[in-house]
Amino acid sequence: QVQLVQSGGGSVQPGGSLTLSCEASGFSFSTAAMSWWRTAPGKERELLVTTGGITAYADSVKGRFTVSRDNAKKTLSLEMNSLKLEDTAVYYCKARIWRPLEQGGHDDYWGQGTQVTISS
Image 1: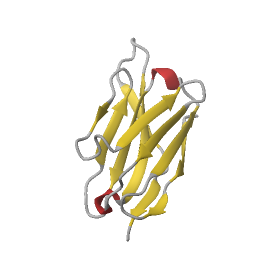
Image 2 (image 1 turned 180 degrees about the vertical axis):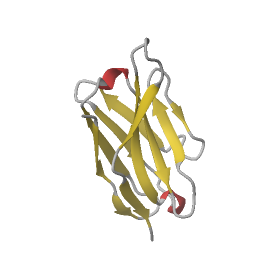
Image 3 (image 1 turned 45 degrees about the vertical axis):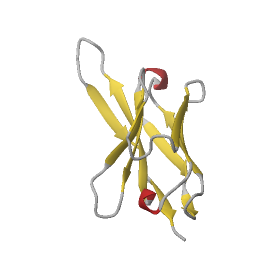
């Protein structure tokens, strides 16, 4: 079955760095659209970056966060630099898996979430 297992995260001071990882299994990773999201306290889930053909970042993280994917290892990573207090959130990876053409549509799967806390 589809699994997305996240690791990394933790607590750092403002200006620090963290790297999150998302290990995928149970589907064709190379053809899936992968993305990172976060949910900050009291806010709706926010799309940070999507990768799969085109890589696009949200303005809030552009220039500070870098996504990478290793299709051979089926791993998606998010390197986060120059972290700010407002980056505190639970971070999620998501896989959008396309169904066969004759079925149409897609299925979305989420990782378990990883807490990232920025505090001084």
